[in-house]
Image (cartoon, rainbow, N blue to C red; front, side, top):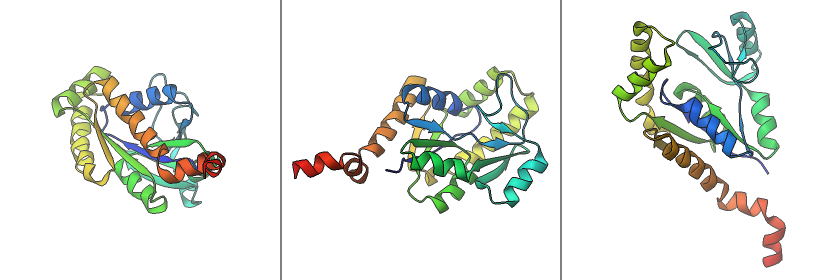
Length: 202
């Protein structure tokens, strides 16, 4: 039985990475697709765990070979999702989460129309700016660019199946878990998962 493909998108600073990390800790049947990127690692990030960090020539070669299900350029860096990784995880029966932007989400939906897309919103622009400042990673100029990019990103929220607001972390996490559970309970998934039991009942 094929697993579900989940797309999770959010503007920078909305808490997507922390929420997805907590989701993975809470559900062993959810896996995270590790993207390739040309950006430099942030403090604490490990190659092969958070991203596959590659230089631009390597990324462009992979792109030209058709290795990516989706790719995008964000804040001057390239990002891409490996097609072979997605196929391997889904055919194993596990659910897979893609942490990608709205451009990537559009590309994935073209090839996986059954993918379930989730957009995480901050409670306000002021809260988003505060979170970006609290990171202590970017200059004031970079933060303003990220806020402008966030507004562009959030303008695509209507393209997504589900929307959750990360005002309180625990509530947003429960929203994500509820969405995943709902998808697993759909008729086709349940009948395939419990085929022998259903046949016995009938």
